[in-house]
Length: 446
Image 1 (tube, one colour):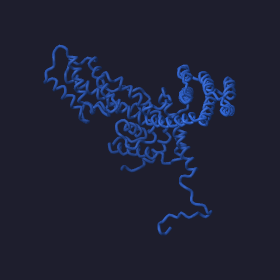
Image 2: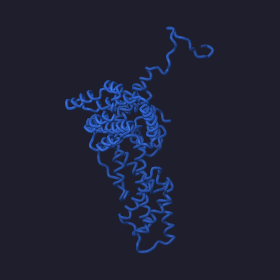
Image 3: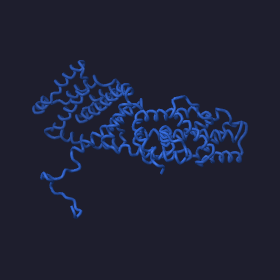
């Protein structure tokens, strides 16, 4: 090894060195991935009460790949059946798979025993092979039996899909339709199980997620590195601002950063909810922007637009324009907002027409919001920050800040979702944050 070259000679046992891609490491990676998937599934079940599993959209990448693979597979099945004599090898394998799926779907309780026995008796693959040899095999008869079992298992909403299978005369299309319907039935079973599991999960979700994350951390000790950096950076920020630095204020400020900033390295403890934080950030910006527009217009124009009905129209216009997915901040579409709100002003002031000078002044007032440092927007944003951080550190009710006019209910709605996220996160990851805090609080400011 003195020449710096790698030694590929056998070790003391005479065997070559083990590949880094050995089965043991692959098993460990698979196990870690499975733990991560379970953790994410449990978390989504808790966070999203309407969560359902769905088939991939046909236009998605997964959907398109699935279509290509399936087309190639079914073409090969058809090629076999069109031979003379027909080659039923694929067909028999598919029937065996259908049988296994049906047996998986049939309840194991006593009520399902009769149906299970019926499937095992009728779908006898050895018998089918004998029939093929004797040229008496009838796929339509097999499909009719399968349809009868599927109708007994499926939800009423799937009846028409399953019955339509019998309308096919093409053997390949019959098999394809059976598998397509079975996918839907299995999906229904999974979603039913998720709905059934949810109440139990809710009662133990914090402990479950905590245990799963601890297992992941044992497998990968670096699984909290980004979280440590996130909290450490927050401490430095608080110290630079001469603010009080305690575990509570650190977490309050750290979670607010997920709303206010684009965090480059998402902390592991917030990774599963980062899309929710981004969505809440967008919602909050729209609320603050709408409230800013209302204040600017009502203060700048005066009595003719002081009504709540005017304020509500402004609110609706801003929200509608900001709802587009590509909008990251209302400032990005300020020109559109200015013109739409000018129309609202014109509709409200019905006693006379606005002069060109008045229209120009209104546009100018709203144009001031283009600056991130706009006084009105900055003040309302600062109040929102104080409100959100206070809510995330207290269980007592807190009065919403002044200045939000008809947008106050919207502000409370966003705040409620935010505090729900933060509270749950602290419940799950509190012990891990508690381990990190002494180290970062003892570190010298950078």
